[in-house]
Amino acid sequence: MKASAWCCAPSFVRRAVIVDDNESIRMVLRAIVRQAGLQVVGEARDGNSALEVIERCNPDLVCLDVLMPGRDGIEVLGELKRRRPHVRVLMITGKADRETVETMIREGASGIVVKPFNAARVIETIRRAFGLAN
Image 1 (cartoon, rainbow, N blue to C red):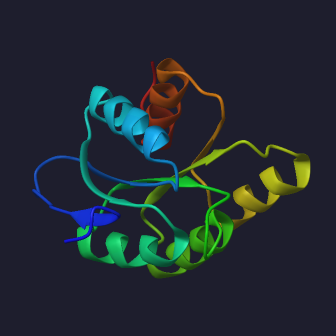
Image 2 (cartoon, helix red, strand yellow):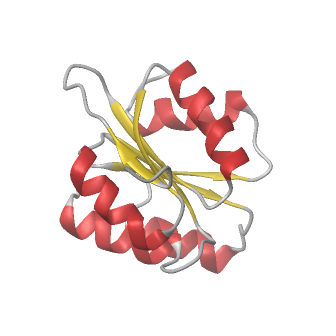
Image 3 (cartoon, rainbow, N blue to C red):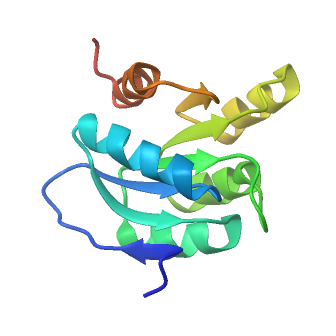
């Protein structure tokens, strides 16, 4: 399987897929998501392969970059929420202008993390997405 799009899926823990075109960001998010208690079951590096990986891996959470090659994260978010409305989607973005944020919320984002981010902020946003208090 390609390193840009992989998945494995145990069924007894909350599962996450990470979608970002930057390998360093994926690596950092992988560590943070694991620290939050989820298992990373798949990754993709562009919007085109994201939906395929998500379909195969059936995650509970998707960490989704906004600006990527191919389909952008907002387009992927809209399609994902139509296909799998129960999946929580954490948008990871360096672009946090009002219009972009409103669009992400309207399309169904469960949370938004602005780059640069830290582990505590990402974990807090994941916990809120699952309805867990700190």
